[in-house]
Amino acid sequence: MQSVLVIDDDITVRDVLNEFLISEKYRVTLEENGQTGLERLRKESFDIIFLDLAMPVMGGMDVLKAMKETQNSDTPCIIITAYGTVKNAVEAMRAGAFDYVTKPFRLDELGIIIKKALEVAKLKKENIRLKRELRKRYEFHGLIGSSPEMQRVYDLIEKIADTDSTVLITGESGTGKELIAKVIHYNSYRSGKNFVPLNCAAIPKDLLESELFGHEKGAFTGAINTRIGRFELASAGTLFLDEIGELDPSLQVKLLRVLQEREFERIGSTKTIKVDVRILAATNRNLEERTSEGRFREDLYYRLNVIPVHIPPLRERKEDIPVLIEHFLKKHAKAKKRQTPKIPKHILEVLLKYKWPGNVRELENLIERLTILNPGQSITIKDLPERFQNLAPASRNSQTAVSGTEDLSLPPEGINLNNIIDTIERKLITEALEKSNGVKSKAATLLGLNRTTLVEKMKKKGIAITSKD
Ligand SMILES: Nc1ncnc2c1ncn2[C@@H]1O[C@H](COP(=O)(O)OP(=O)(O)OP(=O)(O)O)[C@@H](O)[C@H]1O
Ligand SMILES: [Mg+2]
Image (cartoon, rainbow, N blue to C red; front, side, top):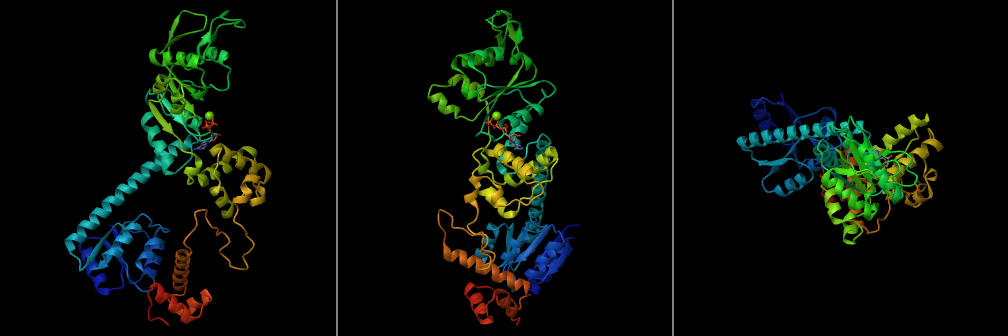
């Protein structure tokens, strides 16, 4: 049996909904104000919530926002609104409500909305489950990240891993290009064969040709023995050509031929060797730009860029920072047999503000360093390297003056002070009223105001005033 929570101060509405929902075989719970409604949402899960917007003590908008912090964060919420106040309902939908119904209800309409909400919720759950499974699978390969950007990368890997398509992985240094290449290989039918990496920038060009294609004994001075190259080593497996943007033009031609014909000769040999190799390439350069500059062959670029996989820099997917930190803390504490250092909230905020030019590698190095230098300790700003120092909020010891504001700072683009003060006042007044069960004198004490001032502020801001006290 599916469960519905109705939060409305109007007894007639509660009665009508109760009767209708019971007749439709739903289990119904009724709450007569926002505050008790929210308490209920913290304790129990529901399949659908009906929520009135205009209620004393705590309005529907506040319930809607607070609901996101409860186990019901994904439960569809249907707003109950009076004729003529649809504007508010639309605002509520912007804040995440599923839909709205206007009073007086048409019962058939109500039935349809409920069915639609349940269907959408089911699809959403299914989608979340699938996404989570996918994420778990990649976590297994050490690939961490839950941001929408990484989800997109996972979705793409999922589609291309088990094909023979050539993939060009792009992204700044340290974004995880090599890791992604490995994950693609280990999720393909070639996973039982070799994954052979070759860094095109690390090997001098004279040696690189022989690294790639191998050579026959006596092919050049120093070729004492016959040697097979990486193409042959990767036979039936995957060859990962890292930093492909640095490949010398003479080798670009040779690589192009292998990509087209799937055949080559060892240096010093005339025998053509056929290979079955999947090519993955990576670069932190803008290859297209290099192409237009004439430094990279256009035809090779198109051969490589059959499927582009771009990994966004870490600063564009900050959501991944906390999960990566957690992952690296565990990894390095285990590897170094140290206790994990603790990263308090204000330090995490500093790490979230930082631009991470070295991306995930830089983050991993930092966590490794903290694990070695500060095992088991709570990290302070002084434990972080110099480049993080100016990111800390200005003064953390001014708490005597205004406690709770120490993390405030003026963003470079400026702010609207009046709006911000209004938002803060509203939030704190609502919270104080909630804490004191709507008793205004108590709320006023909590806020360090006298009762008259509080009432004036509430009137000005249109915060519902009840008869309580
Ligand atoms: N999403 C991720 N989850 C877990 N570890 C990651 C992730 N991305 C990168 N790393 C780690 O960060 C380090 C750098 O990754 P990798 O070598 O794959 O980056 P890269 O893009 O190839 O860098 P470069 O361009 O400098 O060669 C590695 O230790 C890798 O395991
Ligand atoms: Mg790399």
